[in-house]
Image 1 (cartoon, rainbow, N blue to C red):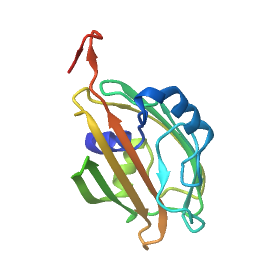
Image 2: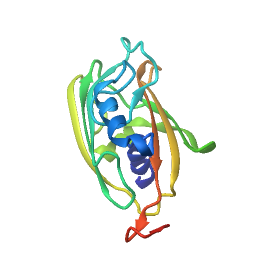
Image 3: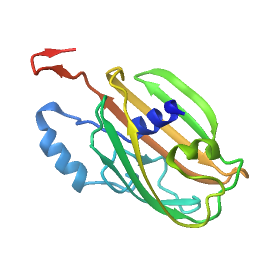
Length: 179
């Protein structure tokens, strides 16, 4: 499903916070991460600090390029540990906002969506890693996207919860004109 690949890519992208301090902000971002930041080069954050009961422990997520850009290929590399086998019936509560406008607010079947990253249910207990390339459409409207994905097992046990803020900016045409 192309939409879920785009949503996943949006959930894993980031942009600079301050135009005049981009280099300094990037250095601070790489050095000063807190307990809610997902390890690696990405904009992902855990929804809550207490993750002891989560079924998945995320070790690292790396995006290339970071930040992603419309019209390019985003490579997502992720690794972690599955503490309990995840069976059919697991689900994701997904919300995507464009600024203050809610674009998506749905519950999706995790086992159907996980096929987009070349995995299948059951997802067995143990170490896991994925590498996925996603072609981002050049038509992504510029603006800020906020994404939250709260994931549960078929028995409503918490798997993980992630949030991200993504900013796609207008590209310049030949360095002269903003579109």
